[in-house]
Amino acid sequence: MSGTTRHTEPIDVHLIAVREGETGPEVLLSRRAGAVYAAGCWHLPSGHLDGPYEDVVVALVRETREETGVRVDPDDAHAAVTMHHRGPGGSARVGFFFEVRRWNGTPKIMEPEVCDAMGWFPFDALPEPMVAYCRAGLDAYRAGARMAVHFQEPGDPIAYVPKADRLRLVRAAGSGGPLPGAAVEEFAERAVGRIAEWTDVSWARANSQVWRVRGAAGGLWFVKVHQNDKFHARETAALRSWVPRLAGAGPRLVAADARLRAVVLTAVEGRSLHGAVLSPGQERRTFRAIGELAARIHAGPPPPPDPEAPPVDPQVRLARHLEAARPHLASGDEEYIRQVAEHARLLPPVEPVATHGDFQLRNLLLAEDGTLRVIDFERSESQPAVRDFVRILDAFDGREDLFEAFLEGYGRRLTEVEEAHLVAGAVLDAVSGIAFGTAAGDPELVERGRRTLARRHTATTATTATLSSPTASDGGSSR
Image (cartoon, rainbow, N blue to C red; front, side, top):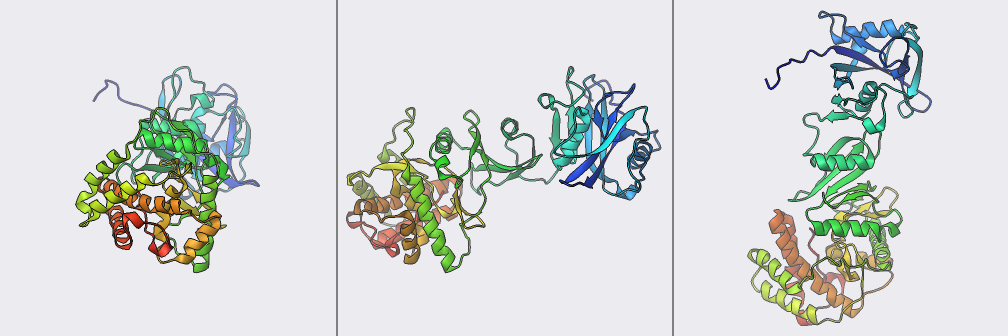
């Protein structure tokens, strides 16, 4: 034992009687009165066990009858929350909260000397003041928790106030993947309120940390922790600058913390287009919408460059990617890649715009009404518009109808200079994808990069590389 005093907390039971009201579920509450603890505060019908031979279910049935006059069958008492509570004065207890939805009789005040009011209240409109212990039990119940801790501090009020909310939900075994850590949890709850459920929805690769979170009072958000400062800066800059111009086609930034490299985002409706099965007509409409969305992204001014960002030498970056990708390259690939890089260096520049940077099917969501949305902006930069076409080219392979639908939505065809930049970008992005996939343990990404290089190397040479048709294009790697 680490302490010298054993815990001897009393045990109490609490009735969460629920009925369907005109606006939704309602809970039965009574107001304490007279010479009792927390007089004037609302509370659940509750009480202590009478002695060592009374179990918690029997105690609930008895207390319910004594305080409300209704009779509850023990089989209708369903375990809701177990809570370890400590009051502001330092005394602790363990409370068992039971949900009951069936009973006999009509609730009424049975003990007027300690109760002066009783009524049904919607969960979203609970009365004030309410005993903080009771409110914590109801909040834990609404959050779907099975266990909770509510240790108040000396000086905390007996009645519930948000600034002294001490509820801590205890996560159930097998309730999801790893949590992000206490600091990120606290950051997220400061932004959206108490979170009832964390679901790990990270990509199946190293360093991906994304959670879908459900609020205790409703609502869905995403919490994301970036793998480095650069990705965090890029995504937050995009979400604060050009993403709001998409008018609902992207998430809204709720909160950001540069120290934690964490963001909280609104949930975006839709299912990923990656692997989606669509009819030919749906495909053409969808790719036209993708072109329209790309045009909206590129329409505004590019975000200002980060003055603190160090300059990037393309040759140094290419050398680094080649070093990592070399074991996966075919014979002649490295020489071809270097030729493409040199050719790209000599191309006339193209005016930069705001770009998504990872514009591919997995980051595009199709809603039930057919509208298109985009997520994941950690590679957003000021770049030529064709940078956003590199990673969606794979979808056009052998599908000229989809390529034409895309260009129709985009509103124009590419210039010859843009086509040359696009081909070079596809090759160099494939190398980057192979390097990244190797480091992240993503064999699918490595194979897609190799496939891209094989198609380009076979189809053209660096000195004549242009995109003459969708069937001659290649797919960009994803990461």
